[in-house]
Length: 313
Image (tube, rainbow, N blue to C red; front, top):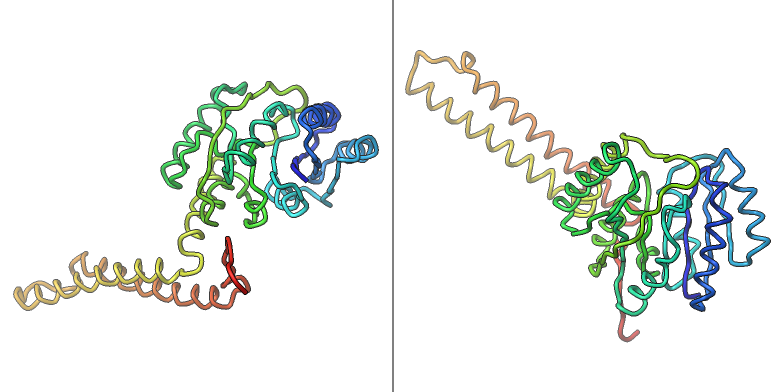
């Protein structure tokens, strides 16, 4: 299998026939042995009925239907599990991603050797105030925190080497940060391609303003789990030790001041309470690190590491 095309969708029944026909035409023109995996994320329209009909019309179409709406991350994760192609391409079902981009994305993975290629919608056909400007700010923050120089990390049109999608788990709202997850899994060759962003032809957008707040919080979670997921004591222990030492030094200073100036009472000075709170918080951080270490060491995946090659038995 050369290529797996994974399409998460929610209430997109109008666009699916045109999308599949377009993908089939492109893949057949280039001779790809391919499959189209459509994940219906609990749609309330006729999306699943359309997928069933398309699967009888095209033997490359496969469908997965969720009992209810779980979100795009869950749909992508299920699609990644089912994918068999050496190259996996994801795209949205609303026809804003062009299937004509498939050959070049495939070439960048199969020939140029990229692990992951993310689309960049350099020219967007969205509302400038509600989508374009927030997206630019959001991606700027992502670049500065993650260190991955992508202009459009949240673009749904991406291509992956098969090993990438089989090595990461996408959950919650982490579909926005798959490049970050791939980086922490050890895949460093991450590229970018300018792609066409087409005006929405059917339906309405399924995302609102809350995705930017949730996305920022998720980015912090990804960064933390990537750096300290298997060694939480390094984070909480360091933070707790520094906080405790600050409180301790302030306390020593106050005690010395008390002996030098006998008319100064410790409890009458605000730094006394600041030092006390700092020592308590430092102790709590340190204990949190111990508890997190116990949880981490008893986790079933504590020794799951990605092995690239082996030599010998």
